[in-house]
Every structure is written in structure tokens, then in C-alpha cells.
Image (cartoon, rainbow, N blue to C red):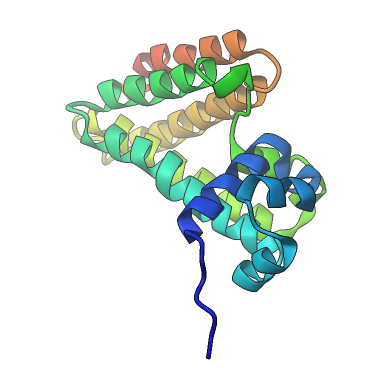
Length: 199
């Protein structure tokens, strides 16, 4: 008879997510994951297969519970500019309000900065994140542009979305070093959306 799990998988994944978010994949030690989740190594491996399986679940949790709700709010805003401002402001506030003053930036970017950045699956996950966020930025910019169907306007929107993602990435990288400057960079991205809109 199979043994039923005596733990909440979502809670375990969220606890592990905090460890990976703080330390990145490479530096997240199994003893810390065990302490954080309250489960022993064998239970974690039985549930997730490996540290990598637990990380993959944490990444999915991060996308579903942290990234995508902000993208949904961006899409639901009355205008693209309001959505972008709200998006960047919410991230700036999160950076400044990090628990215990611990600045973490982006879980995916933290993971890609170590040796795991050479892992094809990690690179693929980060690139899919880039494409999803950049696509949401482009859609927001397009909402405020009448008749943006011509090639020049479409190219300008694509360039604007890339530039906004670059500012997001810069802010998330700075979050680990200087939270105030990270928040200022993120808010500058929100202020910069007007000039990015195609003529």
C-alpha cells in the first residue's frame, strides 16, 4: 500500500523557492532546503526526484505566483502606459519591501548567474521568461498606439519592449546590491515608456 504524503506540496515548493531565490540554484545547499521545507533529503527526492526537480517546481511556482499575476495586472490596466507604470512600481515596491532587508531580485536571473546558467534547461526557462515578459511589454505599448500595423511601428514597439526588459533586468540585478538604486531604475523604466511609444 502506497504511503500518502503528510505534507502540503505547494507549501514545500514555496519554502524551497525562497531558498533558491535567495541563493540561486548552485549555492542552495540541500541542508538549507531540508531546514526550510521541514523535510529530509529522502522525502524531497521521493517527491521531486532530485534537487533539480525541486528547483523546476520552484521556478513554475515563481512564474505562476509572482511573475504572471503582475503580467495579468499589466494587461488589465485601462491603458498600456498605466499598466507598465503599475508593473514597474509594484516591482520597485517589492524590492524596497523585501523581508528582513534581504534583496533578491529575480529568481530566474539569480539561477542563471551561476554554473547552472550553462545548463540548457535553465537557459531555456530564462529565455521563455524573457519572451513572455517582453511580449507583455510589447502588447502594452501597442495598446496606446493607434494603427501600429506598419513595419516601422511594429519594429519600434519590439525595440521598446526589449529596452524595457533590459531595464527590468538591470533593476533586478541591482536589487541584490543596492535596493534604492534598483527601485530608482525600475521607476525610471516606468517613466521612460512615453518616449518608447511609436509616433
